[in-house]
Image (cartoon, rainbow, N blue to C red; front, side, top):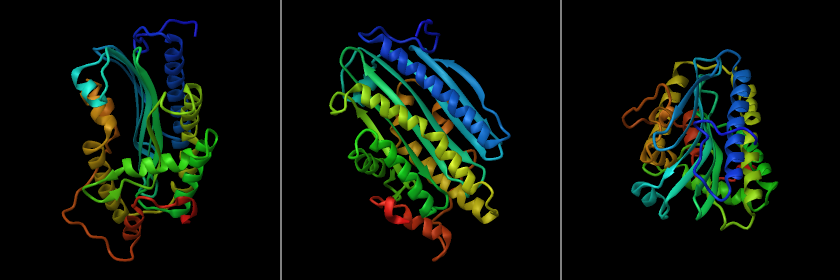
Length: 316
């Protein structure tokens, strides 16, 4: 806490500068730890680091990995930005304000193997100077082929993180994820869900410190989850048929991110860095007209699992 903020950590003056500094410092450290963990899991590729500045205030570090043993493309993004609240931002937030501050880490990993799942995580803190603050985030899993036992294990991890704060959190945030990660025009969920939360602030009964501790716990759970998925799936055999299915599922992932994802919209509307925002898109994706799966196939079985309100804790 003793050193001065650098160019991309600089934040607007507020009544609690120390807390914002603490959150931004931790988020940067989380990016470092996750990148080290993923490089160890991959065993071949390394992240490149691309620092950037936001013209309106603040900036971040984009880290991208590609062409690895496990990861075909992945991004681990850190940002700490601030500045005047634009008319567009005020409309999106549905709140008036003069100055904002936002910091967080966002991750999307697209694996080389179709037997490995896509995974996404986001943890963030937002503040309107002198008015309100909130935390948001979560982790969700998008398998190309749903394995119920692995989906159940993943949800057990999410429940464990939530239970450390309040046993009532998991069912609430699980439902929130089901509703959020839903491709309405396809009438299917993006994957097997997970947990999702947004704008959890003074309106919650937990207090700022408890919500901050919960957000840290979510971030710290990411690498162990992905290590488990890699251990169980990275060496499974696959062929061209599985790769074509992977490209089709990546197409659905792309549809969600470009049509519905609030983070993508917010980043673009607030003059965020385009490359860092769209790094979530896969390297290759496909769209086939009126594609139909073969009845009884693994692909058809996967589609049957892409529904809201599945109790994954008992599904396997």
